[in-house]
Length: 113
Image 1 (cartoon, rainbow, N blue to C red):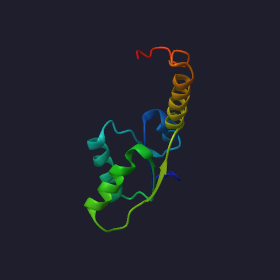
Image 2: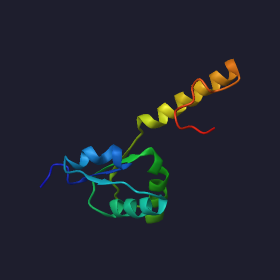
Image 3: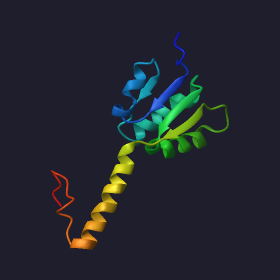
Image 4: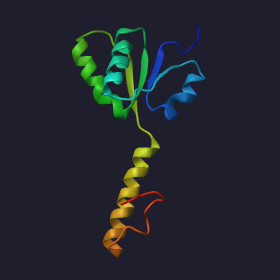
């Protein structure tokens, strides 16, 4: 039996795949309905610790209210670098528009705006 058999991680596939190699249960929901189903199973199961990406945290709160009072796993939310990188990129784009009137200097390859 794994030392991590009572842990679960919910997040995007590229963020959680490394944990699967350690024997941790990983879940990568594609939408809110799938996340609800996964989180409901985690709440009712034998999981002691669940790491949830910030994107699915509101779904967890809803599930917890629907299920009612009970013993739940310890839930720890995490974020990833992509959210921060998007915010910084948006700030730089806004500054470029304010300074030059266009964002052509900071437009990424493939942006069609």
